[in-house]
Amino acid sequence: MSREDPFDSALDLELERVVDVKPALVWASWTEPERLMKWFCPKPWQTVECDIDLRPGGIFRTVMRTPEGELMPHSVGCYLEVVPNEKLVWTTALLPGFRPVAAATDGSDGCHTIEFTAIISLKPQGEGTRYRVVVRHGDEASARRHVEMGFHDGWNTVLDQLVAEAKR
Amino acid sequence: MSREDPFDSALDLELERVVDVKPALVWASWTEPERLMKWFCPKPWQTVECDIDLRPGGIFRTVMRTPEGELMPHSVGCYLEVVPNEKLVWTTALLPGFRPVAAATDGSDGCHTIEFTAIISLKPQGEGTRYRVVVRHGDEASARRHVEMGFHDGWNTVLDQLVAEAKR
Image (cartoon, helix red, strand yellow):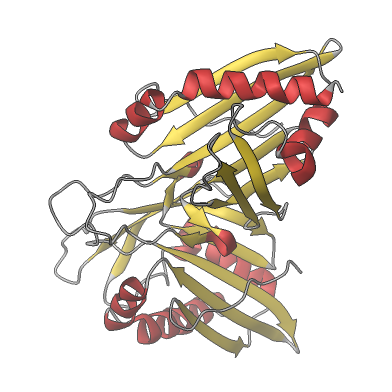
C-alpha cells in the first residue's frame, strides 16, 4: 500500500465509506468506460462520453449531458497513479502527457474551473470494500467552491450509483 | 519502455544528446541529492538545498544561490513517474501529494512562474546513454518564456556539468 500524504482540512475534501462490493468490482467500475458512464454523475444527469487510457499520464475525459439534453464542455485530465484494485489517482490540473493546464486566458479570474487531484483508495473489508476518496485543491477558495458545488452530496450519490450498477 | 506522448513543437522543448556515462550513473546524478546539487544549475550559480522523495507524488525541491550569495525562492514540485535508469518525470504544476499549485493571487498576471513537466528518458547507447529531455508547457507563452530564460543553453550546460561530475 503506498503511503498517504497528510490530509489538510483547509484544502482537502474526503469521503470514506464501507460498501458491500468487492474492490475488484469497484476498480472495474472506475476503469472501464462502459461501466463508469452508468454511475459517474448524479442522475438525471448523464455521462455520455468517456475516454480512459489507464497509465500514468494517460487521458481521463468525460462529457456530461444535462437532463434537458445539453452537452457540457468535456472534463479532461490525466491519471497519476494506477495500482490495480488498490489506488487510482487522477487530476484535472494536468492534461494527458502530464501537460500543465494553460493559465486561464479568457479574461475571467482564472478560477472558473476547479483544479483538483482525486485519490481513490480501496481496501478489502469483510465481503466489501473500505472506499476512501481524498480530493486535493491548490487553495482554500477552490476547496470551498467544490463544497458549494455539492461535493459531499454528489460524491456520495455517485458512490450509491456505482454500488447499484455493480450489483446488477 | 513506456510510450512517449506526441511532441508539440509549439508547447514543448527538447534536448537529446548521447553522453559517455552509463544510464545508472546518470540516474544516480538525478536522484541523489548530494550528486544533484553539484550540477543542477549553471555555474557560478549553486544548488544549496535539495529534497528528493523518489516516488509518484513525492517532493522534488531545490534552492539556488546567486554568485552574489543571494538565496532564490525554492522551486518545489513532485515526481510523476519513476522508472529506475529509464524514465524520470517531475512537474512544477503539482506540489507534493499531487496537490495542484494554487492559482497566483499576488496580483501579478499569474504567470510570474513557469509551470512545466520535465520528462527525462535514458537509453543505453554503446558505453554511454542516449539522454532525452522533453519539457511540456500549458501554453505557448510559457514555452517562449522558458526559451528566453535560456532553456537550451541552460539544460545543455547542466548536462555537461552532470557528465563532468559523474566522471570524477
